[in-house]
Image 1: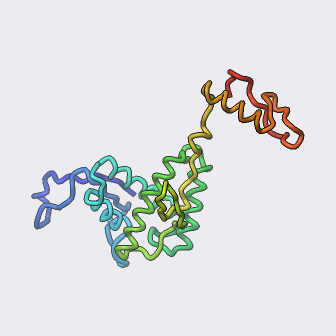
Image 2: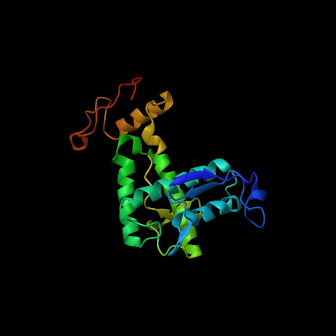
Image 3: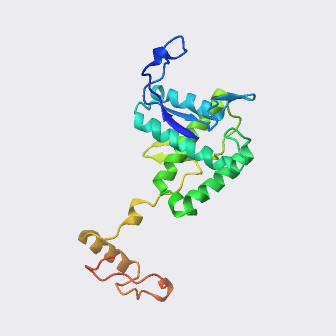
Length: 219
């Protein structure tokens, strides 16, 4: 599958009635046989191109984002074709393909692996595309599963959907490597109150944890 970028230069020499209403720089996916439709109707790539052209009016005016989105769709389409799965296939084969794709991007060949932010961005783009395709009648199903969660912030309660394909990111506190002096003193005091000393002696009922650092030591 080829990825090209539209340019209106010289459009008046084309066999068209008016200038194409497509922004310059808009990515266009083209199948290797250069066909945009066949006996079954529009090719999947043609439908993707329609979605791409709507990005500027759907809150995505940056050409760099158009290209990024097009590459996400192309990568997905090139992967699933090896399993004889169509972009607008039934839900079961699409879900199976998504599982295989997730494994490929997480623990496949090194050059194919994605970091968590990259994978999550791909999931976001693909889910946005499939929601659009279902709403427009191009697709009957999407490969994603969603869960309804309730969040509480202050006195505000909100219900929202989360895509289960998104990978969990470590919380900020998990990545802390060093303790600030003030926090270190508070931390050690809390341990003493809880029955542990700096050497992790503690009482017999609270043993089994990791040895704690000496004051001033890196952790």
